[in-house]
Amino acid sequence: MLDWVPIGYWEVYRADLDPLARHYPARPHDTGLHLLIGGVTDRGRDIGTALLRAVADLVLDHRPDCGRVIAEPDLRNTPSIAAFLGAGFRFGAEVALPGKRAALMVRDRALRHLL
Image (cartoon, rainbow, N blue to C red; front, side):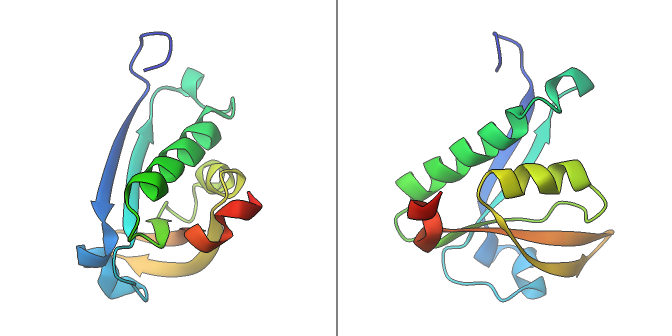
């Protein structure tokens, strides 16, 4: 919610237990994010970057066994990839997933103190 208006949807899941794990070198307790940021007016104002950082921080704060947070936006979605980079994620690899080529985005717990 932003100003009491719904602006997005978030899903937090165990990436290492998901079919995604067959497409990258998964580690135990990798935690994945799926998200949708609302309408056009909710994008392009650094809201996505701030939300990605906050949700990744919440995952790392509340899942002590999680060493990294993973996401896999479509490789063509450059605004999304830029938001992930701004939120402290790094580009891990290009992966072929059913229905898309994705950018594997990784936020490492070990590097959190540098953000």
